[in-house]
Image (cartoon, rainbow, N blue to C red; front, side):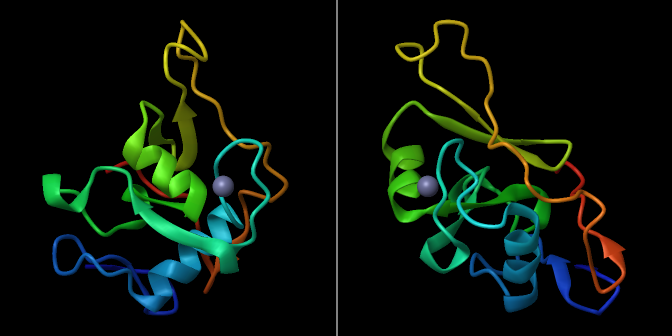
Length: 127
Ligand SMILES: [Zn+2]
């Protein structure tokens, strides 16, 4: 288990699929709402997605979680869109029919990477 400076878990590994409150706050602070490009849904409308699915061995960790609204969460699970985290930043790879080169896209960032929670940087490390 990895804790932030305030003793809140940022990585509970395989202990639980459920997102602990402190980890949810860290994802919320990093993503600020749905992370899908072009979406402006606030955190209260969002769910937390395991980038590497829990059932495939994914960890419940800041480096494997991304905030998505219900519509984009459904889209990630039912279409060829792929969510990933690069250097701790959510990116989305579109299906071939949208972009034949499948260039990753990210939401324009309006927040500051130096934002902290409990004195610790919120920049996630890749899993
Ligand atoms: Zn969305």
